[in-house]
Amino acid sequence: MAITEEAPPGEAARDDVPAAPAEKQTRRLDSPLALTLLLLVVLMLQGPIRGALSTPVMQSWMTVFVAVVVQALPFLVLGVLLSAVIAVFVPPSFFARALPSRPALAVPVAGMAGAVLPGCECASVPVAGALVRRGVTPAAALAFLLSAPAINPIVLTATAVAFPRAPEMVLARFAASLLVACGMGWLWQRLGRTDWLRPPAHHAHEGQSKGEAFWGAVRHDVMHAGGFLVLGAVAAATLKAVAPASWLRTAADNPVFSVLALAVLAVLLSICSEADAFVAASLTQFSLTARLAFLVVGPMIDLKLFAMQAGTFGRGFALRFAPATFALAVVGAVLTGAVLL
Image: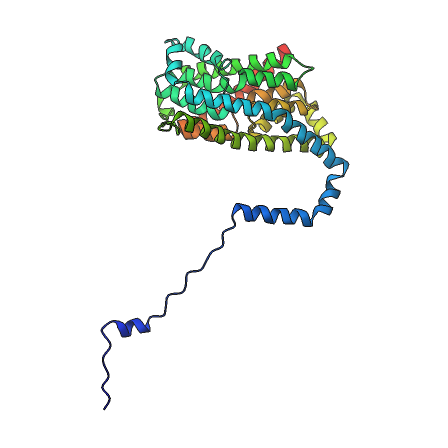
């Protein structure tokens, strides 16, 4: 009689359990592989692509696109570098000491500070948040937030280069932007409530060395501002080369619609203020006043600024501040254009 050993408890049950399926290996499409595939597709389709680019419409499109990017890129890079220097190396306590104690006087002083302290939109929001944290009155901090990316020397120089035959655009942009920035500061001082403004959190660069914070700010701003510059150049080239001329003439011939159209376009494109003048200059179908609205609205409120303001000061603040800024910027641009243009 054969003697069989009983399996230890649990082994029989273990035999009945099906083996666990082997883990499936997932393939990840990394950047080098994606770039290689893209290059292969371009090589395979180089004939049709070359034919499409040789058409008059595409040649006109490429001309406008390259012109806008090449003209704007040096100002964008310079603005990003100076903006990072201010955000990292200039302490917020400097602003607190320099501003008057009375809020009504601090607002125009903070607004004028934007004329001597270059900074793009991406830097002005965290700087304004740091000012509020250091005890600066919110009205003055908001005036600086709006004026710094709109009237700093780099932006005004870029505007002069973009409009060589209309030098009055520089003065009009400066006057309208400063008027709107101070107006919004005084409006907040008059009607703003503390519970609408969430205390801003600490800046993301705090705790890093100066060098790390500087290059981190440069990388962040170049990637974001460069992407929006390309988007703006694409839109400008498309409007110039693809959109039917009759549509643009119809929009441009209506003074009210042309101003509102370019103001909304500025919000949607979210172009960096160091580069937006070259996009505006390419929209030759529109009046100078309509293009001034584009230049005044864009640095003060656009999609990326709304997101940054909501993240820094709270969504409730952004939902109130953004529409008021847009309306006042449009009115300020129209009034300034009527006087100076």
